[in-house]
Amino acid sequence: MIEIRAEHLHDIPARERLLDTCFPGHRRAKTSERLREGRLPARGLAFAATRRGRLVGTLRLWHVETGDARPALLLGPLAVDPAIQGQGLGSVMMQAALGRAESLGHGAVLLVGDAPYYARFGFDRALAEGLTLPGPFERARFLGLELRAGALAGAEGLVRATGVLSPVEAVANEAQVARRRAA
Figure 1 (cartoon, rainbow, N blue to C red):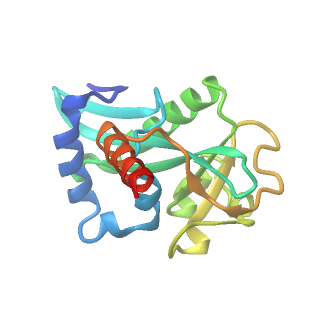
Figure 2 (figure 1 turned 30 degrees about the horizontal axis):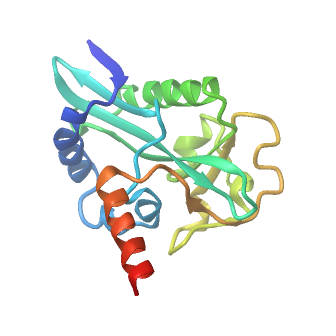
């Protein structure tokens, strides 16, 4: 049996191995990664799927904001162990994550991913049409979903990260601010 639960700190090494397996090569060079880098996932929206204590799936959502200051979430990455891909775990994790995001009052989700796969959950390229990302991305793969009607209607501009800095990044930021003040 597979359990979908909140991600725990001890899941991180296994999550990173799973992501390296599912996205070999340059996963850390992607524009979406720049929006996640140095930040914590949105509270209550980092999921781990385990089977017999072993991590077999991961999905996280992150706080972002559109260029016209509309809050949204950025989904990703979603990864499932290749040994069990095609058995529906990704879909179950998506439903759980989107349901939880909606129940927490979030209005919209953005992602860069396979349009035919994500369309089944209601993601649509048209909802992200007026938005851009801070780096290269494939326009046809940039999708949006409204959890609340009208949350992305007319949204435009550059998407930027707004999530809480991870403790390491927060300390580095404070040091940088202190250096600037001293200069």
